[in-house]
Each structure stands twice: as structure tokens, then as C-alpha cells.
Length: 159
Image: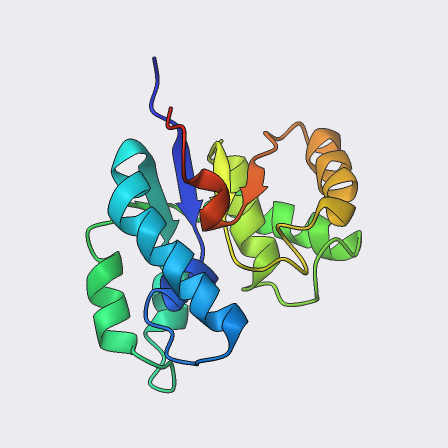
């Protein structure tokens, strides 16, 4: 049986080092660390240079330890086709008009046929209300449709 692939986007790796003390931030840090420490080894985890570039920004909080945590994770390539997928998403108003943001992460996870896109972005990605539109866009392009989940949803019974 094949090991499921998880595409890791920026919000998850950021939550690992979150220091805010509001209940939402504390919960995200707790679930992220639990998934990272206990469940992550059961998946083939990948990320992208887009995540590395975002985290490498000098203004990004905890940039160095976050980059160290991300370093051993293989990075999927950003092919020319991925840029066309992003363009399609933006033209169809699937994601906010930021070609280096959520649309790129979804395009990468879809193009590389990742089983899951792991995110804390519940507004644009892990949002059941958007899933029909995401599925329509991907099916229109003949793309795989990854399951959009938060770390706490990938804890428990493992593949």
C-alpha cells in the first residue's frame, strides 16, 4: 500500500512556533505539534520553494527555526503548468488575487497529486463551502483534487 502524500503549506509550519496566547493560536500550535511529532512520520510530506521563500523573509517571525524544521522536507517543483493552473484559479475567482499565495499551494498539491493539502487556512483552503468550487476547477482542468485538511484532522487512525 502506498504512503499518502501531504503537501505542507506555510500556515502549518508557522503554527509550530506560534507564541500568541489566544485560544485559537494555542490550539493550532498544540494540534500542529502533535501532528508533527506523532502523525507526520506516517505520511510522505512535501512542501515547495514557495513556502521556503515566504518563511525566509526577514520580517517573518521565527524564520530561522522554521526554515530548519522545513529543511529536510522534500520540495515539489513549480512547473510552467502550475503557473497556468494558478492563472485559471485566479480568473475563476477561486482564491484571492495573489499568485504566490493560496492558489499556488492548491495548484502544487493538485498538480503533484498529493493526497492531502495540510493547512490552517480555513477561509480559502480547508473550507467545506469552497470545496465544490475547488473540485469544479480541478475537474475542469483534469487535475487531481487533494483533500484539504487541518493537522487535527490527520491525527488518529493512520494509513
